[in-house]
Length: 580
Image (cartoon, rainbow, N blue to C red):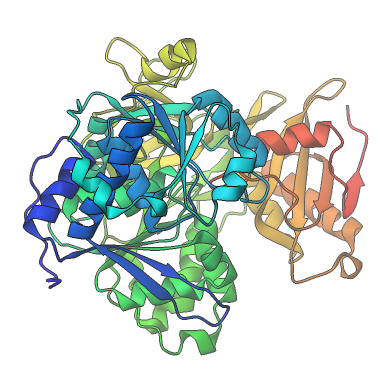
């Protein structure tokens, strides 16, 4: 039995309480499906847990964890994407332990981050799978950490489980930040935080009134992947269909097929994923796609570009995709994840703003066809929380149309950073009313949040502010050899003033021998000079996969800058000039 009509959602304090409720009221209803793609041409092999089976597995693993460590200890999840990840996470919460969502050591390019997070969180138990156990044991310190394979725990262990009373104000998990502007820090998310944020997201995307199927490929160690693919479905009793991020990257059409296969699908992806689908899914692949049943497509985790939305809908409009399904959103780990979103069914909010005024802290309209205009998308309004724009230096609240730091207040705001009291006080307690300082810049126009950039990424030259993502967007449009959304703009010290540098990957579809690197650099410099009144001191072209990225897939400008200053890049091509 798997009725499309979802049952009423009860008030529960924790995610495991919701699992237990659905297991008792809708035991045979599907809860989670993981779609594996064992071969390049596979259409997907499904592994599914009903709510009854999920409850059994959660209680069994929780019982095993209770034998291994004491309540309040940290448990690191180094599972591959899949059913075991979901089970291990929920079991950790049920056992009164603190989950640390991570990934197996084999994730390319992220071993150093993984080691750093493990050293910071100091878990006593690591959960993984029998398939990944050997590499996890080799990676971890065997003297201090016990490794448990989720799929090795028998169902019979559930018979010995005794429920642990859990306070909704207790820490449920540590959500480590992506590290795009600094070293990763573990945000303490309470049981109450995650339940509240799941409810806020469900309300914002209309899921509280109209049930959906959550379809996702975002990694479960990422805040949006965890909330949208695990927490929200558990709170509402919805089916969640998961796939591996690598399966998406190899063949993005797999994601679209899952969206087409499930009525009223709700899914999320960063901006680059929509461009990626539009450029790689062929007409032959589109032939059997019907996308008219999608409820909402969330676009978040990096600047939402209206041009990307247009390309995506131009590519798949013939498959029935409605433009109003696209929902630009804003969130961050410190607020569990969700803060603000455009609502499904509403047209995209397009904004053309004067670049010079924006750099001076004012959001003034410009003509969309003006080459010096900045084109942005509105990220809607918050749900179940408050939002304001404040002067980052003085804390004074700013009026609509003024650019400042985005600050958030609500039951979803985390307790603070694990082991970092001073930084927690600075970020999580702005003013007597405990506003969260997000470190993001934005404004409010016509009641909608408009995100303009990161405070720490801001490039300041001769007293003028420049947004790096704006410069990057200009550069990637100047030459087809520049790989989209795989470049970083940043400032480095000069003898008399800051120098601006762009490090960009070249596209995989072309070789270095085919690229006129000096011509590419001249085109980039000319476009940036014309549009931004800014001189690029250095344009470095590097091979695909060279520009550092965070664990959530965003380009890490901070790490790119560090590596540039260390001379770590072996450029595929370079065009520099000495600048003071």
